[in-house]
Length: 86
Image: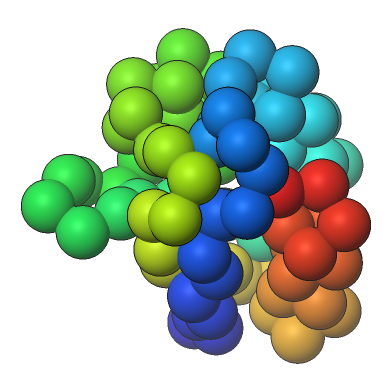
């Protein structure tokens, strides 16, 4: 399992468009990807409503876990997504 943390910088946090982009990217990878923030249970990144239910706002630090498949490459893809979109 590979994990990384990222602090959200978008003014609106993770809203519908961002959650959809996150889910679409996670579905395309051959790993199980979960996202969580302090004080909440991690959820599958492929589930848009579950990600939105985390209520992630600007300044929140999230933890992303990548398990199975090509973990290093897939974690790099997810890190790129976060740095360039969130």
